[in-house]
Image (cartoon, rainbow, N blue to C red; front, side):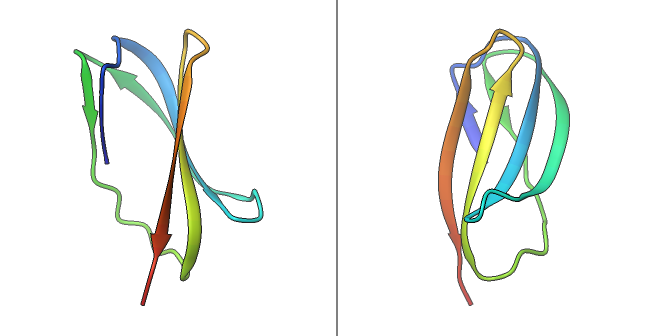
Length: 68
């Protein structure tokens, strides 16, 4: 996962399944203007969303699909 155009500060990364259940959450600290991290989660097949929230109130959501 990579996101450009972020500012330094604190935030949170959340992985959410299609039913709205949070399957993973992590507090993070951003440094610089980009965020990149690999997550190795054991997720069932289906549609998920990753939400990144910044301490200044901004958030971004991206949809992804886990396939066989």
